[in-house]
Amino acid sequence: MAAEWGYSPTNGPDVWARLFPQAGGARQSPVDICTSIASSDSNLEMKKLTFAYESQSDLRILNTGHGWKVEAPQSGSRLEGGPLGEDIYQLEQFHCHWGETSAEGSEHTVDGRAYAGELHLVHWNTTKYQSFAEAAQHPDGLAVLGVFFDVGNESNDEIEKIVSTLSEIKFKGQFTDIPDVIDPTTFLPSGLGYWTYLGSLTTPPCNECVIWIVYKEPITVTEEQVTYH
Ligand SMILES: NS(=O)(=O)c1c2ccccc2cc2ccccc12
Ligand SMILES: [Zn+2]
Figure 1 (cartoon, rainbow, N blue to C red):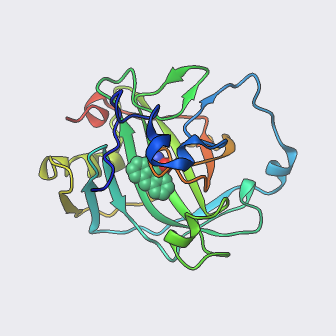
Figure 2: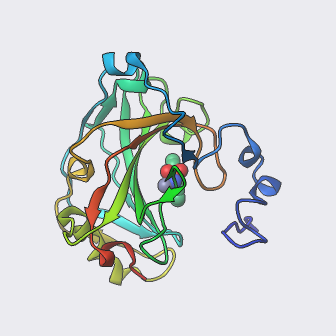
Figure 3: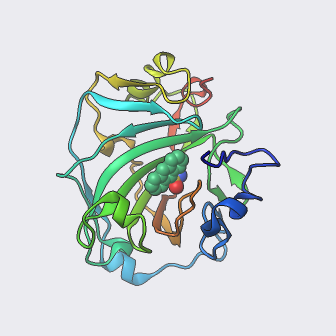
């Protein structure tokens, strides 16, 4: 039977390494981003991080049991520059992490502070690898853009297109199609400053294959948009 991992004391992050060896590695995610020790890198400013996405409709959304995931393979998308060297990365999926209350939920923290949620746009290195699965086996295989959610009075229209479908997928493994057109560009904050580090998948098997790019500026969503149960 596949090992059931979770977040309880008996199957949570502290014991993942017993079942998933990479979880005991040296570049595990998520991390607490300590702004006082984060250093700026002039090379990153020279090679500006650029992205280009397509708008897509009828994307499939899945209840993963730990949140929602939208499968969005986009052969026409490109993420490049910044910490990605000369390679081009293509969007594969995006998903969200949120908590029981809006005081918690993000995977990364900043100086010990958690945000209400965190959106991850997952990309894979199409310059070097032939598939997402192959890329996930290599230290430069994946690039994930992380965007923090702050709770405010303004709802985010693009996020609303997604969370409005969640009532149809209340249980793990259920999926449905999102009728609206989704443009991933609209998920990104206007301020494009970011932190970057070499890390891993944040859930088992915790492959150490992710170049993390976490935007400093959160986007605003409403309490209802990130505390869906
Ligand atoms: N948080 S994560 O971006 O590392 C992540 C996942 C997180 C939760 C559920 C499924 C996930 C699948 C991933 C696949 C590739 C890269 C990150 C992934
Ligand atoms: Zn994630």
